[in-house]
Length: 454
Image (cartoon, rainbow, N blue to C red; front, side):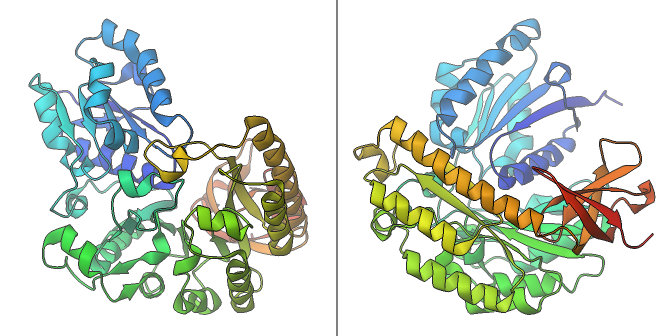
């Protein structure tokens, strides 16, 4: 029996990349690879990249530069770049860094076994094509390993919104929804391997419209065109019927796809957690129009009111971009006003940075000093709201899924219904279980609690 090899995968970016990294590790498992958390021990290194953050490509090239000594010391070490930067840069990666053996886009990671075989034969392997076949089909035959109590599950990819600041439509393509039957099959498998909480992923997840079974005629491309009659709400309700699955979440959403059936699911589906990430980006209608968001600030506020009427205890999260081209002081003040009206329990805020190939990259830019000042003011307000939301949890009893041991002896940590990190003194036998916890204190990034049930 030949000795098994080791693969080190470094993941950048969002939860979808985490999911893809897991799938890549499993795809290579059949080729004799086990995962390692040390690049120095690996026979293959994969950088699973994200194109969303500022200067993403340059950061990848810098990382490759740091790995060059490993390649020099071990010429048989194989190095690959995967994900959105691989999709955007393609052959340029191999031109700038000849030590790279493999470049694979986010739509092609299921073909890694064939690419790995070519690399071992001494070839360079490049695949950034959008597949005609179902890239998820190979997941059915992956090794059945014990899983952590929470897991990601991709249900939708790509985006048709074409926001002026975003590269996703160019790197991930048009919206594609996986067939509902395949998702349910994978979910049941994950639950059988120990998963108790699933987070459904998509670059525009609440636009999910999957077929009931199989793939529409013409493969994935056919499904992209034809869609299906399964909405995200219907999928959530079907997932909720799986015995052993206790919690369901989803991310990331667009306000324009927040349908009435999904709002109703938040009201009456007990397994759907009371937490919603719903990016708005700006509180100025003028900037929203320039961003091509196709909604107004008032429409967003009306939607939030409707959602909270259905689920009054909902914890809301959002995304904000400050310093978008053309943003004035008045536009920014409108964003602050929207934040004050909504009251976010958590939020992510960023300075606008150009993405080559997107419409906004060609426009006149706001000065960096102005962006910095606006971001500091926005983050101060968001931090204040987050602290208020956490302080309001003190004295409440919540459900916590214990995921791992804590920093202190005898301590376990996990996530509450509202996605707060909670640490509790509890026995190891409670790992992977959901228990009632009374919140006793709050700190910057976590809550402290005590068990209600023992």
